[in-house]
Length: 232
Image (cartoon, rainbow, N blue to C red; front, side, top):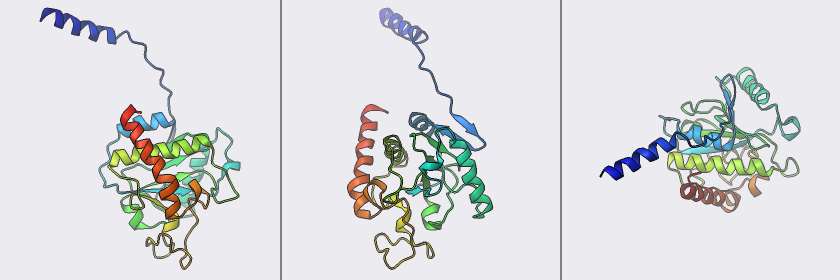
């Protein structure tokens, strides 16, 4: 008994002398918090979300696009989007909760406990989290970087795990699948409806439900399994 107690005390004392990994300080401006993927993982794990989340929205900014990103103007772009959404669109805040950038960084702006705004409509927003991906991902425009691609898959996997979602058309949605006027979900019946191409005709192979099922959801599911197995 005494030996076990001494061993436990020794382990506890030794923990105080372990090297501490350096922590990268997230950049903050106003409500906007800019983080690495890993910082976002830790931030999300410690976030308390009281409203029901059943839908993760995928959007691309279209404008600004890659040509407007210089590698250091993340916060300036976010402030510009917030200003446009408030003053031009008449929304109460920046529309999206989360934004990803070409260099793989991720920003949280609108609180997760506040439903997003935007033209996708109230049905998608009331139980949703909106992710805006900086870039124009229509075919022939921006080619998504590897870093942004990895971030998009990773944060969607983290959100699915956080809120108990299984990747499907009912849990991860594209703006393209929602009618601009009626705000109803129309999925692939877009020829007869007024819809946006968002998140882009080239987003992970396309913006159809078949493209999402073949090229996007499997990546998220695999990443979810990896996170559960490795803890990161």
